[in-house]
Image 1 (cartoon, rainbow, N blue to C red):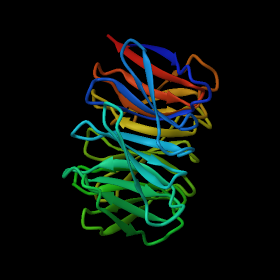
Image 2 (image 1 turned 45 degrees about the vertical axis):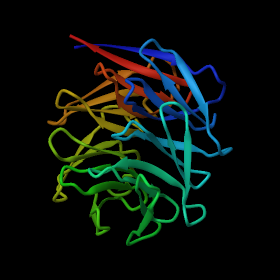
Image 3 (image 1 turned 90 degrees about the vertical axis):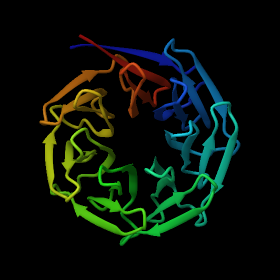
Image 4 (image 1 turned 45 degrees about the horizontal axis):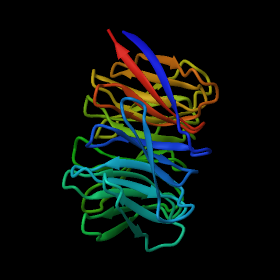
Length: 296
């Protein structure tokens, strides 16, 4: 397998790309955390940006739903944002001030779920705008990323709680501890094997948890790699960003890890997503979008 990495500069200064997702139009869409915009990049590397209605929103995570709309969290503005592919915005304000919405995903029924870092809640938002919030057992666990599991529940990392949370669509919560103390879980995804895979930014590990809560951990070869986001690949593998190691990592379901250095030093890679051609796209906070191309 041959790997090449290309990088594309976001021309608007100090945009701070953070989250990234594949849109229904085949392009990659990303959040500009500091630039206060939603960006779009096509396979040719052409970038277009759409300014957010709310100033200094602190836009973070982003997904594309089954209808093609983009949903994203506005961490500082305390809102959930929605944008059509032609640039029409709708925003939904959270009931509790300073909730700090962060991670976001869609369930099997098309409802949008999100984490509230500061308030210790998991939120649910329907397409019609009806919002429900579920309190977690502890309000200070910093729920971070969230993803649907193979069991139909939603699974999320608790960054300060050193655990993985599970919430049913009815709102029932279960917490599963991570064996390594103070591991700092952040990104999480549903793997090709039906298990949940997550990164441990403080303990320098990739974790795997079955839907029954059994955990296996794999040490990342590069010390202080600070893994951040993780996604399921297309060949029985998973891909993750290394914010500290300045690399893109690949891990097989057997636990074998390979790392690929990013050409730009101190790129600060965060969000990661799979493109239509199987390429790995990632957001670099240094004002670039990266693309890892795999060839035989």
